[in-house]
Amino acid sequence: MGVGIEVTNLNAWYGANHTLQDINLNIPANHATALIGPSGCGKSTFVRCLNRMHETNPIARVTGSVRIGDLDIYAEAKPVEIRRRVGMVFQRPNPFPTMSIYDNVAAGLKLNGYSNRRSLDEIVENSLKNSALWDEVKDDLKKKSGASLSGGQQQRLCIARALAVDPEVLLMDEPASTLDPVSTSKIEDLIFQLKVQYTIVIVTHNMQQAARVAEKTGFFLNGRMVEFDSTHKIFTNPSDKRTEDYITGRFG
Amino acid sequence: MPEFRARQIPSQPFETPAAQSSAVPAASSAPESSAVRRFLLARGNSALADRGFHWLMVLCALSIFGIVALILWQLLLRSQLSWHAFGFRFFYQSFTDPDSHRTMYWDPVNSLFSAVPFIYGTLVSSFLALLLAVPLAVGVAVFLTEMCPGALRGPLAFLTELLAAIPSVIYGFWGFFVLVPLLREHVNPLLIQWFGWTGLFNNDNPTGLGFLAAGVILAIMILPIISSLTREVMTAVPHSQREAVLALGATRWEMIRMGVLRNARIGIVGGIILGLGRALGETMAVTMVIGNTPEIHRSLLSNGSSMAAVIATQFTEAVGDMHLSALIELGLALFIVTIIVNALAQLLVWAVTRGAPAQTH
Image (cartoon, rainbow over all chains, first blue to last red; front, top):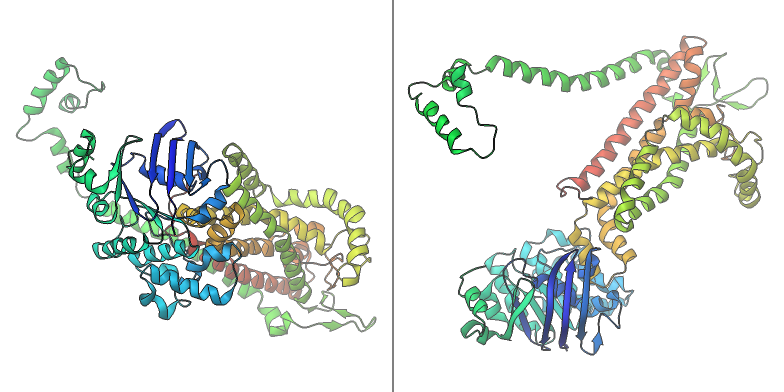
């Protein structure tokens, strides 16, 4: 089961650039939450703060608090522990090219020393089924490299890799932006199924996608969160003028 | 050409209205045929010059092949005598001295020659060098690409590359006056005491020269090439691979191992082989510290010789055509082996770095 995320007074910087300013929001457990906004508005930075990937850049800095479940991830834990509980799927599919499909999925577990062979096989199979890739790759799990798949398959492989460590939260940073429409709709179907088990936060440029997959939507602009509400309300009756201008295509 | 000057772009970036108005009539007063058009039409198509340039460049490129082919031809030609006398046995035969009944390989007085001790010396010193240099070089590369604070990266990388710029005779000097005494006084006694039982370290050479000294010098000399190539292929690994591993909850070392070294390993092997190529052919520094005796010993502390070293020391004082021919045949063998090793290395490095994004430091 997923857990909720509680963000309080989150501020983030890249060097002197104040990319996130006073973000406060509650992301509900076992739902999909979409973050929309024009390029450079801080939505990617925001999800990267949720698994402390933001700070892997040496000039980055964060203040404020993020609670995932009952854990304050900045005060009470090390980045390594957080990232085992919060999976992430990136904009560009990034499977490990030198590993087989099987090893790609098992990478997170092997990394952490999990070596029970039989249950590993089972986890790999389940993760690939959960990411709707199993039927396409089951015959050459150990024969083909992760890089030999198509772009859409690679992205689903990356989702399987993230799911294999059984995270509580799954962060997706524009997971379909480099994919064709068929692969995109597969990823969206997947999000629908996955939110039963995981809390999903998805950054997207595509407003129809947000409307299709998410119950909640947040609108970011210039490093601030302008509005956060149910997706229905954001897209039909937003309370902020700027949100309305953005979703009706007046800018961005 | 007054019309020409009138149409030149004004030197001020922002034209004043006055300058503009003075430029307008010049432009509009040449509707029939402007000076520029006439000039360009009269210029012709330069087809001849362009063809000439093309063939000149082809000639430059072909000259590389020509030089290599000429070297090979000369080596083949001048090693004929030795090749006809010994054939392929040159690379494995040995002789027995009629008086002392000892095995010997290289007897210029009786015109008996064998490449075995030199091949042995070249291989032993080169692989010893790899053994010492590879872990150090990869460590330097990992530190410089993944951990080094930005301010230190430039100077450290520069210093490592600088090691490659020192002439090898200087390494030879340093080896002879600093390294060899150091090994003789402090290192060798310990090696003999602790690892003497392996047979690799015998207490039978009081000079401190030998395979070990040659290996250490070579290790320092090939460190920069391995390290800089390793750095290059590591930088070529996309950032997204590092992020993928980090997002799975990896520590920094795990990230480097799984996300960087694993992806760069073919290129790193290429760098190592390129280092091997350098070590195989290195002449001056090795000559100065290896001892130069055409013998085979199991002990790394013994004197030996290498293919390059024996050519350098005996070429000018060869005692007859057969001696000279045997030395040239050694050179031929060295030439072929180093060309193959280097080609292989370049292919491996190229396999990793091609299509990589531009390096960002």
